[in-house]
Image: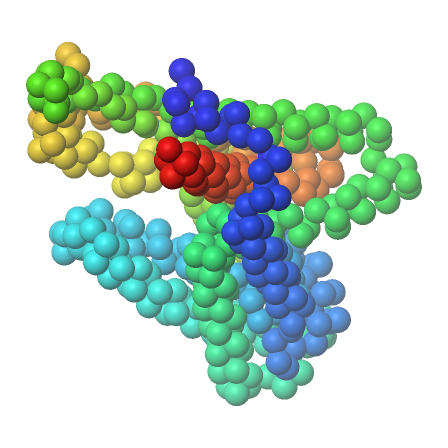
Length: 454
């Protein structure tokens, strides 16, 4: 059943959009910040030859670099100042969340409210700088040896000074993106970091459409394949929109309290449990782990000696872990399911939730407070996570299967599609919230005017 707020939001009229000056300013600011992000993605690192780098990158497609390149909007392919994107920040925030769930000191900080969250955010930024420095150093070192066997040199003047300059540039680019994301969050619309990731993914859409159109005109891609891909993407978008908003709402009852008129009234509320509590973290983790060996081999220049027994085994494993292979898709699905349960257990703590309900006097009807409530929450969460894990697996594995069968590199993979749809839905919800607040403001002004007239 839709809540009262949902009913009001559904009846909002976009005719009031032109009157909401603050909302328009926020939208224009967000668009301007995203344009700055796209401009930065074309500024190359100092000392890198972009033409040779483009040729070398085409030889190493299929690894984890493709995943990071998609999230950075092609910045990694061009080796720009923001080549690392916001992925170091995402990794650092996940590590801090895991540490806060496992370490007692960080767990105590998490319970301190705003001050504790600010401290954890500070640790996350420190971790982001550290990860950027480490990744930037290895990326600069890899660039120097990149394409050495083919006789092409991507770096004009390799050496220690190039590595130091690359590290400083990459750290500065990532931290600037974080600052830009914070500005979008506070002065724009939506979550800034999420919008930056979505903008990078959507930026690859024209290239995909161009490649699809050229393949169709050349006759390499049949009409039925294009229609099937479009139908699959539309169906997946509808499924994601439905499943991401799906939740199990547990009824929470509070003791009867005396009102101003002397009547006893019992308060009720709901505890929403999302069907997909883990979000997009499971497919990112699973794909990163599977594509890591392939990427390491590609950066090594495929210099594996296949004559030895170890080299032959490694070569066979890498062949089976290629995109579209049955072993890859099976391990990908199992990895998504594992990380769904693992990350859900980190994000949602049934014991802590049960204790908070008990302290506030709330209880689930028919369930005793305390240990029984904790067991019931764990019981419900485990069963809805099964559905969420199956949904994530289907959404992420189905595009991989279509790519393997048709040979067409699908622009919107499962992970990219999840991010784009989630961020879009969240941004639209925030726009509706601003319109709703503006509508309430107009009602309050009208009520004050009527009161003065009386």
